[in-house]
Image 1 (tube, rainbow, N blue to C red):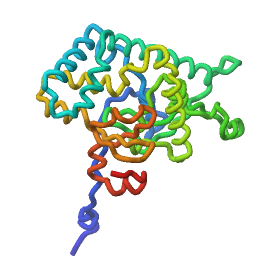
Image 2 (cartoon, rainbow, N blue to C red):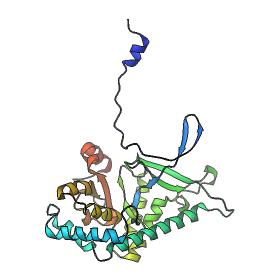
Image 3 (cartoon, rainbow, N blue to C red):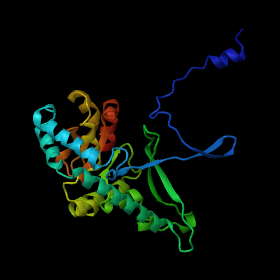
Image 4 (spheres, rainbow, N blue to C red):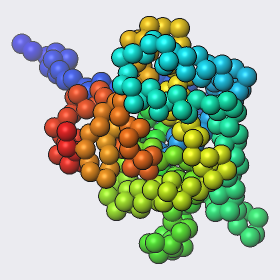
Length: 295
């Protein structure tokens, strides 16, 4: 005779693998027995600002690494990479490239603080709350929430649709040219119309040379290019480096054509959509159908 306990133990199910690992968070309180408050860093998606000194170090550390990569691009170490990509990267590794990038990072950080204070500080000295809109992939591998951030309004105070006060900070940073457009599937706005707004703003910021490009020039290393180059300076084989430095595929938003890992430089910065290579391999047909991507 089967007991109730045996029946319960016989239930078998399989959970999908988590998309993130356990990450440390600071405990800041427990309102009740099944709730905890933690410090949760949020990565603003679809935008990417230049890096400051952390975590890669100042220009005295990173410029020599960039120069090392430039030499590798010249001496055949990265012969596996297409010549066009090698030439594109070499032209961007100039004297003072790291210093300019880090200075742009500091300016972008200052601009973000300015935007937050303008939107959140009230005349009576109080401060509004921040509105958090989690994206498709909610938590990344570093334990950060992936989200769009805006000013939080109570329903009775909510400005009408189209009012700049409703713009996400992600959009404002891109529109003002202090963040590179960096949309990565599936962390896109739920409404395609919202994606169209940030895409158009990104194109305008690039073509009009706003923000960081106005102050530091068109040749400024984009944040994801800077991080990629620092990976390319590591003491590993070319094959190992390429496998870790180039993990995203680029789609040209002008045509929705897949250009792959190495031809992103042919697409203007404001028209690049990124897809993780692993996501593409696992869900290729689904992504093609949802985004209308052409190979």
